[in-house]
Image (tube, rainbow, N blue to C red):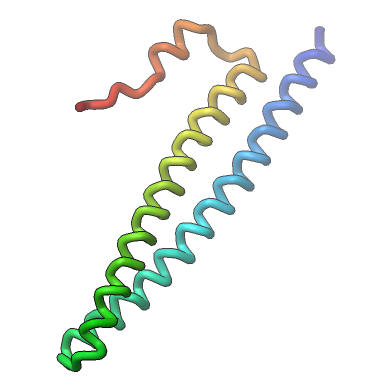
Length: 112
């Protein structure tokens, strides 16, 4: 019995480590895109202030790129949210800390 408890604890720790690594990678990716967005916004503002035809037409492409980046960040955060929920479920399951009733109660209720 005692060996099983240590095995479950080891599995939960391994799952936590993998989860932390996954979250770190996701947040690093999101931050890189957000940093790029900061540069895009600066260039868009500069082009707008200068009111040069080339710069203004370039803004259309920059704004499309910015919108695409925002979509990517939203997808990354959505994936991280799902991964977090799954890893928490796996950790609780590995530790034997909850039953099916707790799982149903923990689900987030989304408003329409």
